Length: 208
Image 1 (cartoon, helix red, strand yellow):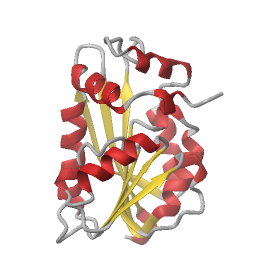
Image 2 (cartoon, rainbow, N blue to C red):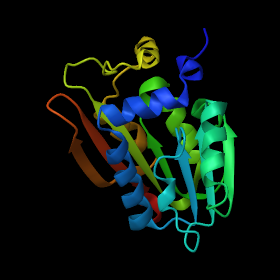
Image 3 (cartoon, rainbow, N blue to C red):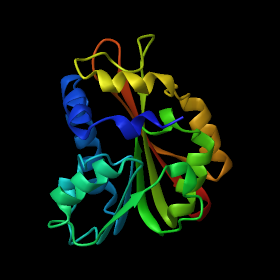
């Protein structure tokens, strides 16, 4: 079966995210992570068209890896940011298939991806990307009993319901703890009465 993400035009995705009020929230979380952790090497998993990458400071962050399964999204991201990010590296693959990709990243941020993949496999791949003191930031959605994909006039997004599954935060914490990573920051951002984002940042406590 073809992954539904491959058949969603980037314009539909961007308009949908804007309509449901999630674009600015994600943008702010990415901005905060870059400012708080000042990575020299930054990996954005599920980058889509690059929301948040305008906050990259080339004097601090010298290398950016943008990972997404959809080539159209990456092409648009490249058009928007190749002239402003000094070392932009595009990776068109599912995070689950990148278990051997070691990039020595200071910060890996994964936004709204774990709901569409096997979280354990994805986390293993991201742990492998981190430097010894690297931070792992995860953003997942709470739907609070509502449908996971909010209905808008952009019907192509409805295809995602066939592969989406809400992620249990306690399971994420347990999986990270098994690898020596513990929470150093946790936030819940309310989008509306039914939906919210959970922002978790982990660090390898074995090297403190």
